[in-house]
Length: 403
Image 1 (cartoon, helix red, strand yellow):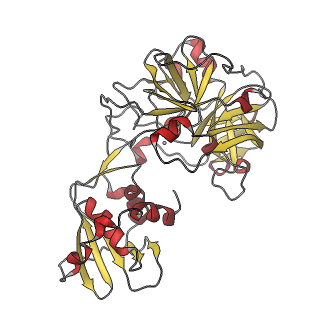
Image 2 (cartoon, one colour; image 1 turned 90 degrees about the vertical axis):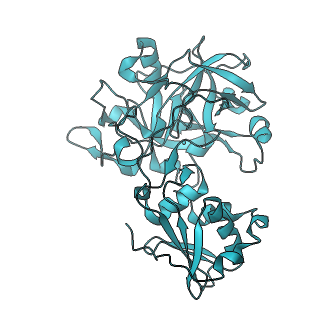
Image 3 (tube, helix red, strand yellow; image 1 turned 120 degrees about the vertical axis):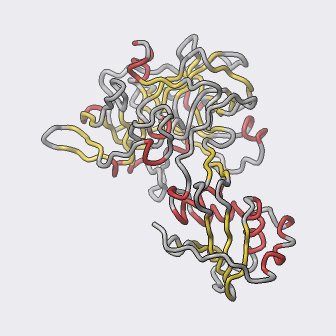
């Protein structure tokens, strides 16, 4: 979960003009209850993702050379067995999916993807790994794990021999842009890549070759191998996606991918060489709706000098007077009804059935306040789209020069 203050700032920035009439919401008290204490879509057309056991041997061999990025705290080492085991099982059913969805019963484990490109190096996205010990993705807290896969429709590799679990020792090359303002910037100025060294050379893993000379071209068939949503490895059909737009640093495709695919290798379907790193999707991944049987309430407390903070126990946002108008403007975008309940305290009611994309700051704000249980199970949306939204980072020369 992102830092909540960053979320709140994102939520309210740039909305002053829309908030000019916010005082009209607070002219009289309204009968709204105070809530009680509470406890990476990018699918284009039919789903193209297949499990390991469903694909041809040559694709399995390629998948064998990809890695799942897994937090060290999520695995435990069984000394007697000589294997790493998953500490706590969590499935798609726990968080995201409707029972009709693909992979509904499968487990979630990893947070990013990567590719073994030789000499003990893993190629991935810049936002997947960091040299900063304070970062959530600090390399010292992350395992690179080979073999996270489904071996049959009902069987997953839920434990890993120590030969397939690696620590990172350093981030050799890293870039992550933070000042991108437009889609044009994303295509032509964005940087999001990493090359990190493992604690030893993997044995028996084929090197995934990086294309170093041939340019990317619109119309080229491409595919990815990775770990969407933290699921066991998924291999996209090589014939299903193409390059749609080619920029200087990034190109867009209609590859099927979700969060968790980030960092995964993107291959030229003809040569099976890596031509890019999957780094982003354009647009939301899921559309959630608030449960049909209940609205969602947020308490807004303006009596404290604290400018921005949240308290999940009381479902309260503390918002100083300077940011209150912008916060109200955002809430009204979701058709919230807002009323004064006491001096310095207001309550906002977001109507039941309100649709909120999971990449919208409002989604993370609500989850931070009250957990995902305020949403229904929300199907993964699979529909035809005219926009092409999976962003692929081109391999920079700095990495080509090393591997």
